[in-house]
Length: 127
Image (cartoon, rainbow, N blue to C red; front, top):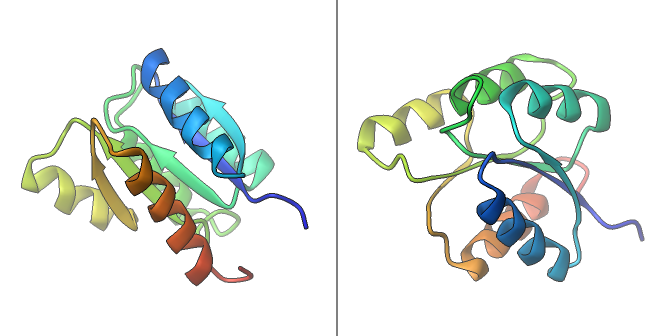
């Protein structure tokens, strides 16, 4: 059976490395993007099974990634996880309105990220 794919949209190299290591160790194929534009483009081209998005991206807020993926018929089915240091209640509300299924605060516990991806894949269409 082919491994499920997770796209990580994260500009911080340390966080990107940590998330990638956690998910690869959990048996997932991992794609990465370090900007909002690259994240949206990669998601549309590769159609990953889950997308993990940081809110504080260099070219545009991650909310835009959430909006674009949620509004695009080709990607609207993909579960979205926000993993960010922006943890005010209004950030969480905005992320949920933009389509986030899970909101995680950095630094994230490795098992929490892995469990969130696994849980979303179990309830996703075609899982």
